[in-house]
Length: 288
Image (cartoon, rainbow, N blue to C red; front, side, top):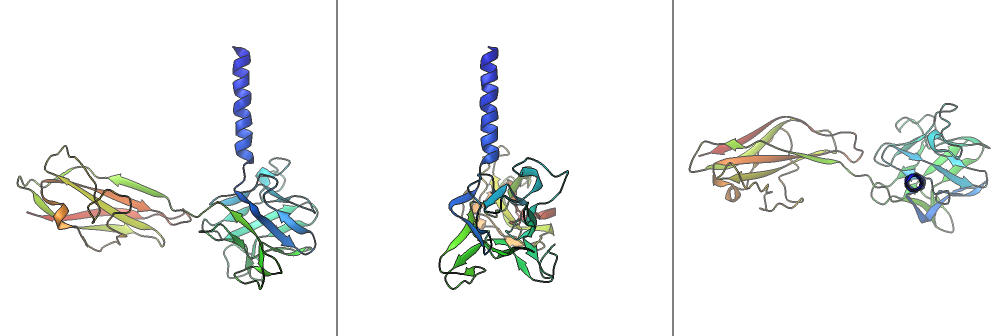
């Protein structure tokens, strides 16, 4: 029995290490370029990962590892010696520093017109939030520019070259969605009421959304089918995006002559998953 338990522990440990080593860099579109050290491979180490907060792992090159954060180097966590990382603002705009033992710091962002980017020369490595393609340049004081994509004629933040290359990741910028169903409201009208409109008060940061669905019934036990304006329960059928302090008309045909009603409020964050709406009050207008 003891040997069986040990075997299970070993298998779990192997699975854990495999999960840590997985990369979300494309096996074909994996290359960055520098004129002095040549190709930089973001796939072969099987460690590079992009998430909404940062890049982790290390890329390989003829100059050795390009380490993207101090916690996931080839030698393990070295953050007590040097604390660095390449950051993602959630929308694919990168900043911060990578490290190479032979050439030192590699900056992913510089210039006065970018966020948290030191320096006077404007540049920034970016990831397209919809396609996962990297673009633009990083900088090292000894190596110069490191290009993350190239194509004949250049353009769109890519170096001009006779052949095409790029780094691509399966990461995508995605919003977080959550919802809350209200308690049951009783209009007190035995013959049923008419649900007219909905209004909410609160804060709606840029890039976020508030959506609503309405359910109504002649029984306090339901059934409670939360419907959008088209009369379906589909995820893409909802009232919205609904802005604060604006009254939105409810489909009269769906919620007429019903005594009881509920609402479902759906909150959608921005793609960076850094901001979400705040609701202080919800007002449902109904009439006999």
